[in-house]
Length: 394
Ligand SMILES: Cc1cc2nc3c(=O)[nH]c(=O)nc-3n(C[C@H](O)[C@H](O)[C@H](O)COP(=O)(O)OP(=O)(O)OC[C@H]3O[C@@H](n4cnc5c(N)ncnc54)[C@H](O)[C@@H]3O)c2cc1C
Image 1 (spheres, protein in one colour):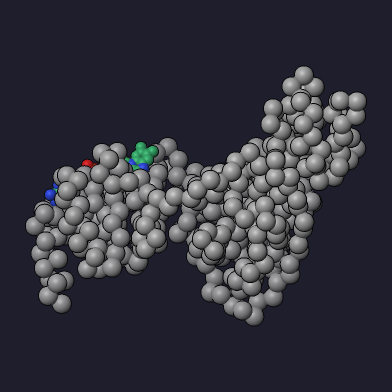
Image 2 (cartoon, helix red, strand yellow):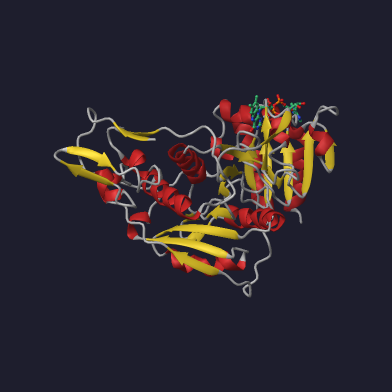
């Protein structure tokens, strides 16, 4: 049920302008909602500046049978599609095939049409596109409104987002707006045999168990998925796709944030730890912040990127953006070198998808050796300089 708190309401009219089904009007200084036309999409709730509108939803969705297809949110950054989009399309294809449903991509932006061929090549059969200058930069308000309206109209069964900064902001906002469930930071997804529910797997209890989470009562079943854990399909330009375009105009005054300046946390040329083909990480065994210079030198010789374990971030030696593991980044390089890292389960979950893991540790019983392909038992302060010397002589 939708309600307006008339005492809080200032009759600013934002909800009237934004309602996609024109169910809201102001008459004689009072807001009224036509409950017959209202679809409970929640857009008015999300944009009301004084929180005067609320929706009370039933705890259980009566009928979920009308919800079909697997949707993937398409995130664009610096003019290109984020790699996680292709990974989600790869996993989405598998889920959609299992359910005998369609794989769809949702793209919102300004000039969004330039990405649709690429989305089609990576497996999207149906692409929902919302193209308007208001979506040029990501904003929680505008994107939540647009996605909520698409969900209300097209009723997807599953909706996947990358567990990126944007995905981690948008998915909970949509979930709260529409009263949906959401599993954050999944590391695997599959379909349960009995009820065809989405099994959303993620580490729980400090990474000691992998929990399978289901969402039986609401649709779509929504999950954010860590970058670098799913396999993309090989692109094929001959794959066929269909585009459904929707005009969803959001009044600019309903967007409560404004981008004044964009300051990159990383130099333009710098590669993120999650993107590196070779990642060299240091742990507490490095001993001090200045010792990381030797890892920088090694990374330079191997065209690698320096990462670290969590204590290093807590000590303030390296920024959080370079932390590898459960509460940091998941990496999938061709080569991962762990230097002075014990290999706690929370670190291991972030490096499992590496092709080759080399561990350097003075403790032969360190758990990192359980998952390492090659292990060197010894003092890293002696081993790494020797390795650097060797590489320089190549
Ligand atoms: C909810 C939660 C989330 C977490 N998330 C993360 C995460 O995302 N990433 C993460 O890394 N951790 C995470 N942790 C922390 C994790 O449990 C471990 O505490 C952490 O990974 C240990 O870091 P370390 O291996 O650098 O340090 P230590 O465990 O102290 O290991 C240091 C290692 O260095 C070796 N060593 C010492 N000196 C030398 C030397 N001279 N030469 C060679 N080897 C040497 C030692 O033998 C030892 O094995 C998380 C913990 C929790 C509870």
